Length: 556
Image (cartoon, rainbow, N blue to C red; front, side):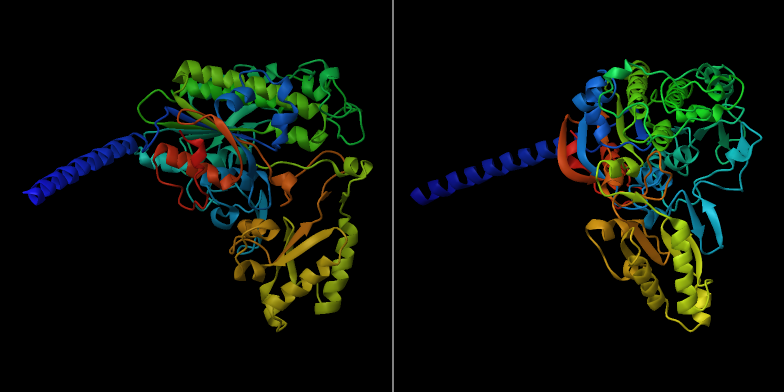
């Protein structure tokens, strides 16, 4: 009897435990189902060309509440975000952000590069198979055909049976074409010269939509042909260097690099529209056009998520001309902050506050002007290529009897002529190593790697890891050069980028809006993590070449 009672109690306990366990599992499953995906009405990807992470912190006290500060306060800040490949240039940067991988996979190894299969230099977005739309100039002969994989926008289009729209906008053609991906409904870029119009390619359309024609004829571009003065009292710009210094370039027609900037070409209302790109007004007209696209294309107004890719290119032009420590760069970012506020306010009104998701990053960062660093007693310098060319030419003739063994030099990579090497009965690996050792003896070189090393090893950290992620077996060269930190190939005024050094790789990454939690992390994230993170958020397939990892901390 006692034994029977114990068994009965035991069965009751087991049954009760099973019910509780199953109900717990059911609850967990229901909870999981609600987190399978987030459905914002619109995803907005923002790439700020040449933005260093410290522009968020250096200029923070000058920003308003509705732009960068809104993203920082209400979104998620990845403080230790880096490009994990080189060269850190505009084309590879935009491709990597949206494909979730690196040049080793997506194939965009530079803005321009030597095509060793066809023995010609090619442009990352150039495509003679298509024609210009909106101009008779060749500026529209573009497509994303050199990008070998899909983008997050492509995957969203496929996921929605092509119902979700993707629109890409930038001053630079490559800043629109590559983010737009292969399936974009439209990509638009700004054609300056004496036209000042937004244009496209027959890859996307046969003619511009009426709203684009209306925008082009509205006089908006002409309204920005005005003097560039500082947004605030220039004496309050204590986060940047003196206005008049020897480290800055000159705007066309000016004799000093000082405010106000009002050369004739900037004031002329009928021509020279390219000059707008090198002022903060280039970002403003980009914002104007993006806002118009949101309204006229009805982005974020139906059941299928749309995608808007915006690249702000003027920050790059300004940085190249004046340098990262200039008052011009500071003023450009303060004005960009206002443009972001205008954009977010419009999205609140047209799409709905809390109904859209935004990420903001860069396509690369930038270093200080070497001449300035040298004056601050920091190791830095410039490369004398004439001296290098003479010295290297003598090495080639002495070692191999001919200079023709080198076919091309681009993006700090040496391309060898493998047919000549074979005819000379030489070993490619040995030739690579001999040339690498020769360059290692040059003062401005930090380190050298060979194509053979890129093929045979799997690097997981440091400079070789970054180089390998940028190395595409079909497209990259035989010898890869790395300059010493602080050394560049550039003029002695203004800043540039392209290296695997940390000042070129450390860039902002902010997430904001629907599905994004508030917070920050100092853990390392990489540029290729962006597309997988957005893919997980939306519950769609990763881009076809994706190698990045979703940043789980970002999502609610």
